Image (cartoon, rainbow, N blue to C red; front, side, top):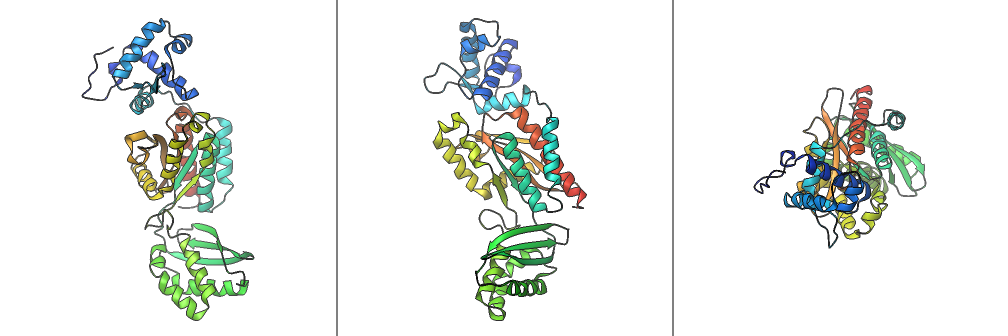
Length: 361
């Protein structure tokens, strides 16, 4: 193995054949088990060297910053730098299985033309298939409003349907005053359509206070609250941004299903805190929008994950004009199954893009 050069990050050229073999075995075993890997384990897994020789190489890999010795364990775990080197140079990425492809295709096709439902379904899919948390940014909404509708669905609840000029159809449930009748909701619908048609969502939100004041003067206070709540669900409040983008997160519970993660609950709590910093996560996914394929963030490579040491695998999704609308990905501990997660994120993003293309962008 080449002499360590601590003035630059280690690369594969620093590793001879023996070091690469041992390094690969340690990382692959760690990703599978989540446990530190010792020299005897490496020897049993097919490396034809004595445990003492393996330990010497492991020490060299640690000097290069690729391995770490957690606590007092005799085993080693890959550092974030080591994981990056492994993913970039040694990871063998396969393809999504036929059964998983069929499930992704069928479930996204089943949502029809509702983009909001497609985005939600994509995150649920990724969370379920990868066993991790999944995230997606909704597109910024630059199209003008064509129609908004308030539909009474139950006592104290209404469905708000938003139709944009680009054919996007979205819907949300909002709470309403129990005494607000379907007829009154129709008046709210007529009131907003007369004033908001042809305006972008950002323009509509900018005039929300004035519209709510008019609604209270022309309708009543209960109707004014529906006007405010009905638009606020798309406003980016609670973690979005001024362009009306929001972050959808699914599968937080999956982060607690990993026995090794449960042993480090403080790190999981930190990750949960990071998931709540939705504006910061949107900025991370925005970096993915500049890429043409899957992008990977490991641990401290991004300040959002510096404390929890998490990993994010993300890819952009595009419309029929190849414009990047947003990004989706999987977030979890650094020992994600990268060989499986990377192609799955990429395939889901491409299927979502084709769905958007079929509906005309």
